[in-house]
Length: 66
Image (tube, rainbow, N blue to C red; front, side, top):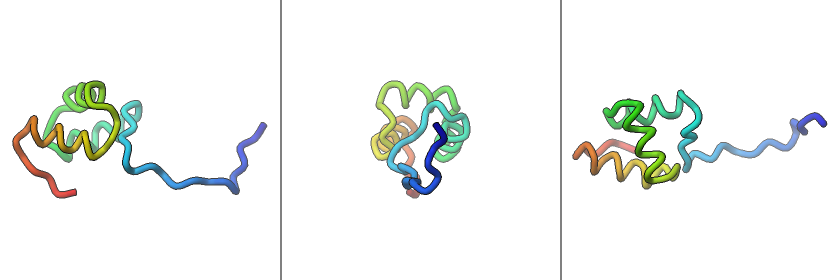
């Protein structure tokens, strides 16, 4: 069955899609870490963006603008 294109939800920006390379790359660049480190954080912390930002800031010792 074809998806109903009239029923489109908003993106969930409170989550990081760890399976999407562009999401991992953006998160890694934002925090100045490698993509591998970003994947490890996602695996350890989960995909909640706020928790990941906090964990990355603790790891790097830097605060990033949100």
